[in-house]
Length: 67
Image (cartoon, rainbow, N blue to C red):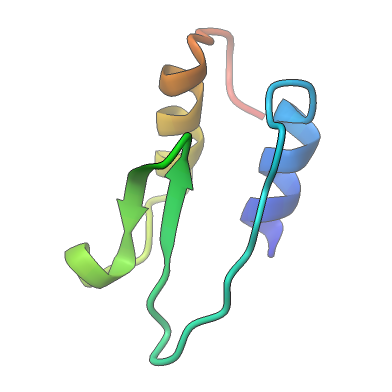
């Protein structure tokens, strides 16, 4: 939940929609503009501390520092 909260706080003006979809077995995927940017199911691991944030920033064309 901290990841979702941070993404919403940091990118609220760039995100038209943000949806959390519960799944079974602890798997999840994070998509941005219909593109998967992280998949625990595919990689069989949790993201590194800033991995998802970096990918979101890249997709949004942002280059300033992290949270």
